[in-house]
Every structure is written in structure tokens, then in C-alpha cells.
Image (tube, rainbow, N blue to C red):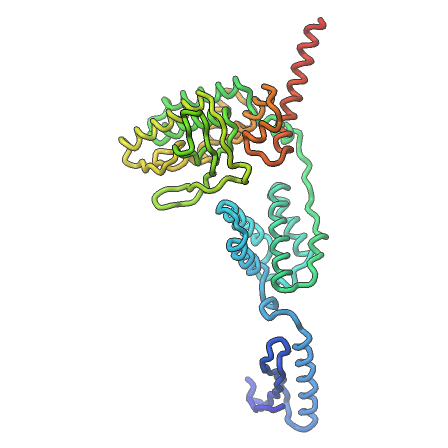
Amino acid sequence: MWYEEYTDKHGQLKYRFYEKYKDPYTDKWRRVCVNMNKKGKQSQKEAQRRLNERIEAKIKDKTPNNIKTLTFHQLCDEWLDTYKKTSGAKQTTIVLRKCNIKFIKKYIPKDVLVKNINNVILQEFIDEAHKEVSHAYLTHNWSTVKNILNYAKNHYDINNIDFIDRVIIPKKAKSREEIKAKRENYLEKHEIDKLVENIYNSIDETDVKANKQNLLMTSYIVEFLALNGMRVGELLAIQPKNIDFKNKTLEIDGTIHWTKQGNGYGIKDTTKTESSYRTISLTSRSCDILKKAMLQNKKLAQWEPKYNDRGFIFTNIKGNPLNTVSINKIVQKSAKNVCIKKHISSHSMRHSHISMLSQLGVSLKAIMERVGHTDHNTTLKIYSHVTEQMDKDMMNKLEKISK
């Protein structure tokens, strides 16, 4: 032990006592210190006692130095960086995880330390977020929180994160309107025809070239989705190389990731899942729609200065894949025009396709393969709604016969 003299801010002479010790985890020499008012034998004895206590506490503390000051926000960023490097996730999934992190940080204070995180803090996060978002979205983000804490457990040897099991995610009771909207999230054939016709006729109501292009392509998109049951992202990612007009087949090998690339916006990414990668057969009408859209793009490439041919088919006036927000706005406006009271979007056309196949008596397995579903429950929910309606129609017919 040794000491050094120093003068405090009040001009008083004080003594700082030091002692060295070897860190058992690094074999490096470190030191601790205590401040005393005097340097006599009694003070030295007291200083030695305090120094020994500090050394013992340092040796017993197995918590890594970086976890002592690591905030939960920093841990989120660290986990995301590791996830990007090691998960093998596609770009769209990584963007989704970034959104999860941004959402989580919104509700957990930035100065909360990882070592102090507990079920109380996390329950407050859940309770506040629950007021603003759906149960499904909250559950999705909670899954990310658990992944982050498991990363901390494995990476920083945190012994116990069992407190996450004590956090409760409250459920929201669905209203009758919500249940009805979900059950009716598809259109009958005559409703689709009316919708497509209204969108197409709306082209003559605008003089803006960009709007004309959006309306034309949306009319093609709605009909094509209803005929083939693709996800809208898969449709927007179609390129000429995916089409075999001779054999009337379409290879679905990607989806659109909404990010900037060079002078354009929207790039082709891998499909949602491995089973989403598939080849489907096309009707003659589907082939006609693709040919019409490709011909329109050729005209734009020749006459429109803004158009940049990026190899996509269903595009806006600049050659970028048509934005899904624009598509849905047009669909919902036209649905209102033709008195369709259901709350629909471009995704409703996928449900409509499943509905039509169900009514034609196509097997559940064949439908799943065509639309790229891995979970039969997803298809079955739509399938069941349709068959339920078919049962009602059957009974109505039987009643007529019995009369």
C-alpha cells in the first residue's frame, strides 16, 4: 500500500491510499484507491481495511465491465448488427427487424441499463404499446425483445432472464365489425369485374399522365391477382424472364423490397418463404394482361423521357414497380364507386382467388401449392368461409325445391 498527497477543492490537504491486485480473469495488475483525511497509523490501518474490501468485491464481481454500463438501447443495436451478419435473413426481413427495434426503443427509456432490466419495465412497455397497436403487431415485437434478451444471456453470461415469462400481453376483444371484415375479405367474380371496369374507366377522367399509368396498371394488377392468387409483392417483382408464353407458365421467384437503387425505387428480393418459390400455370387471359402491360412499357420507353426500363412489368411512369400504397388507394376508391362495402385491398384479390378455387372444388393441397402457403391453417380460414357460404346457398336451393 502507498499514498499520495493532494489538495481538495476547499484547499485542504488530503491523502489518497492505493493498493495493487492481480485480476484473476485477465492476469493483469490493477489498483484500487480510497481517500483519507489523515495519514497516521490509525488512518493507514483503516485505509488498508477499505482497500481489501474493494479488492475482494472486484474479484467476486464476475459481471463483464461492458455489461455494467450497457444500456438496453445499445444492446438492441448490438443484437441487430449481429442478426444482420449471422441470421441469413433476406433484406426485407432485416428492414422489418430495424422497424421492430425503433418501435421497442420508443417505449423503453434510453438510459435503462441491461443489468437493471426486469419484468416491471417490460410490462410497462407492453401496457403502453398495447394502447396504440394491434395484438398481433405487439406480439411480433415482443418476440424480438425476447431474442434480444436471449442474446444478452448467451453473449454476456447473464444468469437469469426468467422474468420475461412473467410479462403478460393483454388481448383485445375483436368487434363484430372486425370479425365480419376479416371473414369478408374477398370478392365474388362479378364484384371483381365491376371493380376492374371502374378502375379502367377512371383513366379518361384524368389528364395527368402519371395517374393514367397508375390506373391502367392497377386495373391489370387487380385482375391478374384475382386470376392467380399471388402476393402483390410477388406480382410487382415479375420480370419478362419469368414468363413462358408458349407453355403458359409463370415462375414466381421473388418479391419487391422497397428501397432505393440508383435512379430507381424498389428492388427484387427473394420470396417470402422457400415454398413461395413456385411455378404456376396461367390462363389465356393472364397471358393477355402480361402482354398488354409489356406493350405499354415499350410505348413509355419510346415516348416518355422519365421512363427508365428497370426490367419490371407492372410499373409507374418512371419504370419503378407500382407502389402498393397507390394500388390500394385506387382499389378502395373504386370499390366505393361501385358500392362494394367490404374493406378491401390488393391482398383481398389473393383471398378472392382462393375463394374461386374453393367454389370450383379444387383441393386444399392444390390451392396451397398454387398460392405458396406453408401453413394449411392460413388457407383453411379462407376455404372454410367460402364453403360455409356454399352450404348456405345449398340450403337455399333445397328450400326452393322443397316448396
